[in-house]
Image (cartoon, rainbow, N blue to C red; front, top):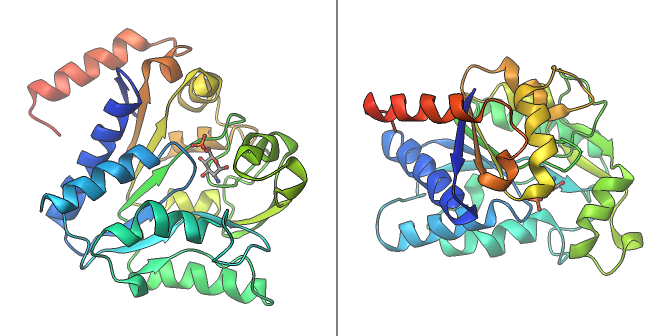
Length: 260
Ligand code: GLP
């Protein structure tokens, strides 16, 4: 795992945006896996700016989002469809037909799940998957206890996740109890993965993800099984890591080798 420790959230966003710019300039028809939550917002802001400056074009890019709340229509103010449109898609040159977010409001949810997995496959698989992390170590909506081989499916959200996300809704009661989410197995099939975390509240989850044993109780720890994962965190989210000096050494050596 590559662990990149940066000064603050702004530097994390800058780093993440550069990874996407690098990916898309090398492969203009990249398949990008996108995430929601407050953490990727800075990255999306930087990508919009880079697009306006002519440093990245999404014309041939195709995207797949990780998850959606069950029961919310794409126009609901807290749906991840709406989040993605408002935070990124409406501000870049991506064709809406190339963006995919699972639908949480369809009658035949099993069909939606099957089609979503099939669409990822038909697109050739995800080149670069962006992830945030929940305070309990969840990735996408794969809550603790999720099978490390899980595929896209419906998951029940933990009370902690619903409480964490209640800030976006009027009250805890309004937060959906279930969500449709890519599975851990689905995520691990991405060619490369970039996980971002900022703030003290994520320090525990990051320590367990990077240095803890691989366990379904910390879904992020499954990333240790992948050969191309970058964890980009600010100092606060890195504060509980035990090998801080070593990670900094690795980064210095990478720079010497001229790697991005
Ligand atoms: C939700 C999303 C996750 C995200 C997490 C953390 O649960 N499904 O993909 O990583 O929130 O969100 P935030 O970045 O707001 O802390």
